[in-house]
Image (tube, rainbow, N blue to C red; front, top):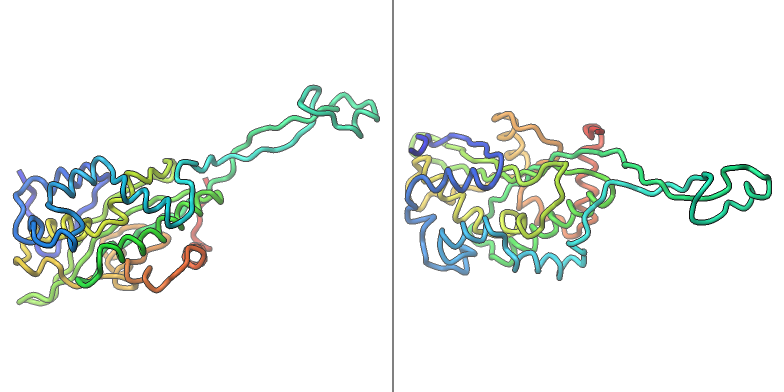
Length: 275
């Protein structure tokens, strides 16, 4: 049986499967279930969005490979090689050999790099005029930034938030949900992460469906996007812990992956934890 939600309720999901299961407990209404304008929704139907979200979206993953020039198949290992001397190895250490030191061979030792953990919350809401292509390209920069940081030794806890405000009859209502996409100890699976991060269906199917379950009237499910300071204020209010939190509209203002990296590290300079 579906949980009864109010117009300003908030939900937390540990993974995508739990979110899909919860949203699937009630039938779709006009906003989330519409088959009109699939080029705006980013999917032909609610069921199509569920399928691509659970199975992974290969097309969006291929777009990441083509546009960002990153090899998505090479994971960040979290280790580095250190050259040391010993009694055996793959090449001689000439000064030690000439000095008759027993440790006169060189070999490599794998050692773990200290993990610098960053918790990132990305707000997926966008305005109604944002095209599917614009949403994908902007969010691809965010995902590329996360990939780049992980290659440099950072580890990312990645969450995606969908938050909207509606100025209803009895005053403004703000509701939303947060889904955990990746733990800092996990490899970033681009095929599985591409849909929630890059597809407009995350907001226009799943965001609409959640707000329908909260009792928002039909055609109001879009609401007003929450981003920037308003997003951070809402996350603080519902006690979501984060180092960096920003929305799609914030990302639109930042045109390169390098600028995004700089923003990330500026925000977490005093908050990075080591594990």
